[in-house]
Length: 142
Image (cartoon, rainbow, N blue to C red; front, side, top):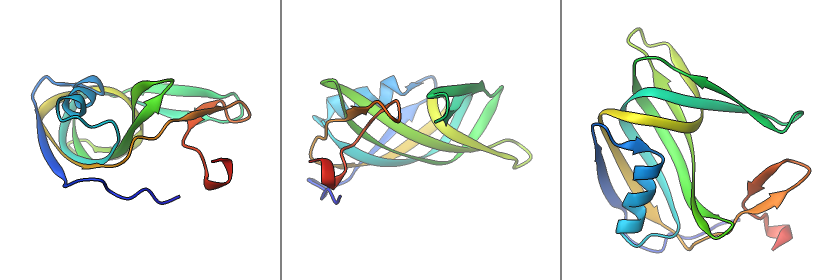
């Protein structure tokens, strides 16, 4: 399913202490975005990342201690049950360059987080009981 961009890209900088994902959702609200895809880089502290186990339909969360370089942040802003929903995955590096990554649950911005947002038409997620998650509809289910 291809969803075309619906506006010019927006470059946003989240300051030290900003909270993810809530402050990034607020940036989108402030700019009138109901749908977006985004990429980002910067540094975060005490990130909580997760891995989804399909067999148990549960996320396994892990809190990483200290400051981490954001090698890559990718995701989208959609709607889940009518409310804004930010879905993001993050790749992180420690001071020795060791990598960790997964589903972003939460983090604090350590220095800055520079995010490029591309507006798209709003999309609604649907719950799929066999998977246990709210997902974007596939073309066959539209």
